[in-house]
Amino acid sequence: MNMKKIITCLLSAMLTSGATWAQKQWTLQECIDYALTHNISLQKSRLQKLSAAEDVKGAKAALLPSLNASTNQSVGYRPWQDAGITTVTNGQVNTKVNKSYYNGSYGLNAAWTVWNGNRNTNQVKLNKLTAQQAELDSATTANSIQEKIAQLYVQVLYLTEAIKVNEASLETSQKNEQRGQEMVEVGKMSKADLAQLSAQRATDEYSIVEAQSQVRNYKLQLKQLLEITDNQDFDVAIPSTTDAMALSAIPALSSVYEQALASRPEIESSRLAVKSSDLSIAIAKAGRLPSINLTGGFGTSTNSLSNNGWGNQMKTNFDASAGVSVSIPLLDQRQTRTSINKAQLQRESYLLDLRDKQKQLYQTIEGYWLDATTNQQKFRAATATVESEQQSYDLLQEQFRLGLKNIVELMNGKDKLLQAEQNKLQSKYMTILNQQMLKFYAGNTLNDK
Image 1: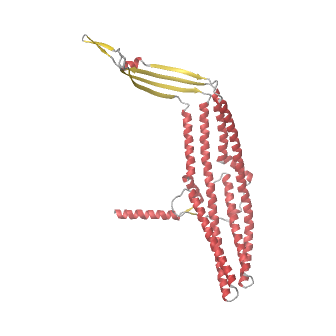
Image 2: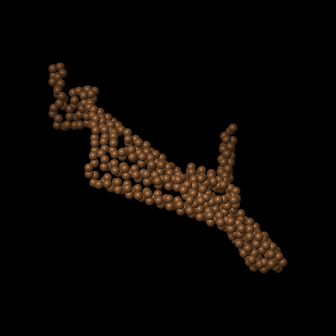
Image 3: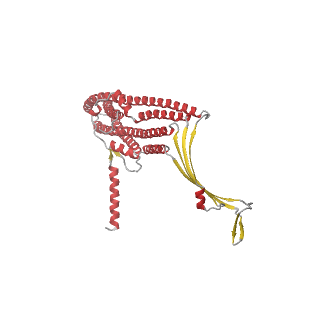
């Protein structure tokens, strides 16, 4: 295959791939899966989780001894030195005065904190709790993103159905306008009434354009939430929804709340914050206790002024040491007392945060439950209203065709039918959304079924 054919195949593959991407319709699950991988806020929370894991490793390493090797090399100069080294060679006495000299020292030192009031072990436990909180915070961010995606997704579904209703209304308006033109031609309708029918048709056209604009806006928000930055079209798959989905049983408020208390990551994170504050108090109290440390080391040194060679100096100057140090705090300018009091105050703050999170959780669930219940009732009523208004409008159209009803009555009937259909759609999708949210807060996954 020559180069020209290779380039042609590559371009064809790229164009096919781009067309496939543009034609892709995203399901709710695909949107969620993609966002959980690519959303920047979620990626940042994962980095915080990794950072907390590193803190745990560092706290564990602090329990081990430390070992350091050191060396120091220096050059000295004594400008007024008058004594030196005297040697006798072949009967001649030679005196050498070294005003410059060289020092070298070498050491290996170890230290180990045997006990410091369990401060180090409690720090390990505290960092582990912090790591768990970071993981829970990441899960909280993921839940928030999923919730936002579901809300945007349902809005797209609702408006897509609303466009279909408006298109059906426009088709009816066009037929009425055509019928009105025929009646004007035979003298059974005035041009003023025909103008009203034309205005109704134009209003329906505007409603379709406005709804399409809202759909594009919600799709754009959804695309941005997924961190998709290319200029390709973004579309969602429209699943089939039934009236039975909106009429399904709504779970009990107390049941959802109890399940949410046991499973929601933000609540568990607040509980861990209270536990971590207990460890912080213990760490602060350790400031009142003695600490015990073991130390040990090896060292040697050399000097160029010595008559001994470097190797002999390394050997003769070698020394080893080992020791135990005990530090007992007596007065620390109230630093320990202040640390304890602040840790206890922090614990009270975490307890209040937990209560606040529980209250907010209940309010959120209660809001979804009330919306689901109210919209389900509205949906039942709207369903009956649509049937009634449809029958009434069908009758009005026939009477209008026979000249028994005027244009105002016809348009009023059409407006009532359109409003009833819009109310039915809105209450249907709001019921489905709120039911999904209740299931989500109870620990279930979001889906488009």
